Amino acid sequence: MLSVVKVFSKVSQDVCRLGAVLGVGVSGLLIAAPVEAMPAPVFAPVLEEIATSPTLDRPIRLPTAVPTDDALYPSYMQHFGIVIVRLDTTSDCDDSSCLGLNIAAVAAPADWPPPPPGEVALTEVDLGDCIRGYSYEEGEFGAVQWIQEGSLYALSYRQDLFSADDAIAMATSMVSGPPVTNVAP
Image 1 (cartoon, rainbow, N blue to C red):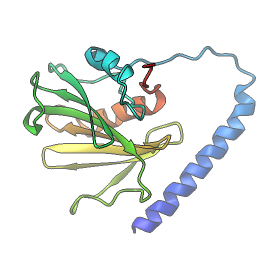
Image 2: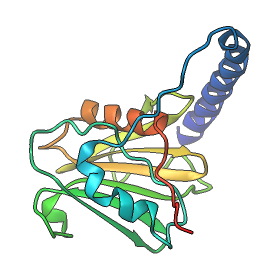
Image 3: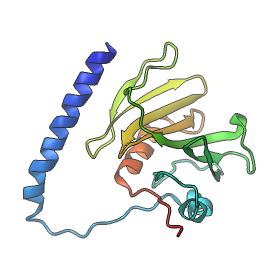
């Protein structure tokens, strides 16, 4: 079944790319100023740290909105080649008990899509811009994962704070928005 999903996903991406190529000719007739989306304000305390990190080895994408009224506290770290941005429900906490949202970027694996964790079923989702991802929920947490520009992105969330639709909307905004990159000399 997994190999059928891989073939279908590859065909879908090829069709999407063809549409994008054909659309270039038509869109050349229209004049529009590009609008760059910014990460949600909740990330403001860590944006400069990310952008000036001398060890940032890959860009990280952040959602343009985080749909919750709960107070969330951002943190940024790198761990074994993984760029991680967390939103925790308690400040100065790095434990899973206070995790609200976790965004990670790592080098894309050769084997994609990922095997589902345990007996959990993966649901394929369209994230726009010819990007297909997979979502699942298990226990207290859910996740949306996709590959973009050589990186595997994983957005993990606590289900009592965010719905699957919220997570897919956040992932979609991450796909279409610009990445945060290192601007350090």
